[in-house]
Image 1 (tube, rainbow, N blue to C red):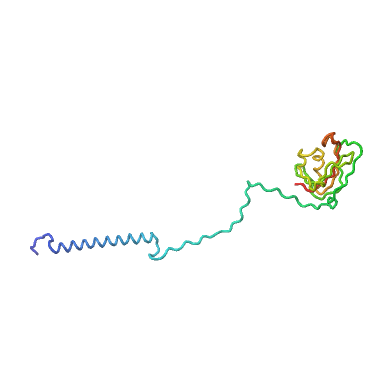
Image 2 (image 1 turned 30 degrees about the vertical axis):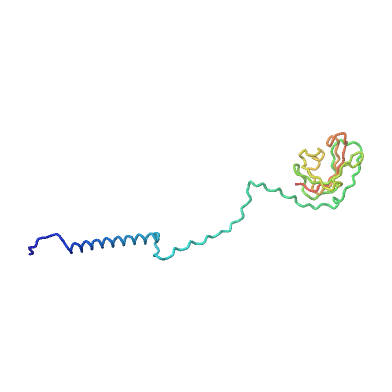
Length: 202
């Protein structure tokens, strides 16, 4: 059994032990710094370090049907269907005077049309010749002006004789309309006779 008493470590032994402890602490610090840098560079990814991140897949463009027109956009009115106009309507009619005094509106079909029937509220395009019923004198003619006449029908925009006689007639028709003065321009103009070619209605 040793009789030496315990004494504190002094001299070279204490210096070496201090250096060893300092070295160990420095080593731990270096390892901690390396781990921090490693985690930061990898961004927390589970893939091995040094492997580039996979590029995102290219964006795909899906074909989409054309957008339907907005419900707020008013649709254009459909064009009138073409009507086969009888050859008789290609020439200006000769209109003769009537006899007597008219007491009521009278409509006489001259050429039968094959198109749809005109409806009140539609806009009618027509050629016409207007004469004095008793005299036979030409008062007005769209043929002489070189262009058809267009007007809303059945809406009070023309004389009562037209508003009451044109609706119901078929597009492509030629009709003779005898109009008493009261349903036309009054007694100053007197009774009238129209021959009207109905070219279109929409």
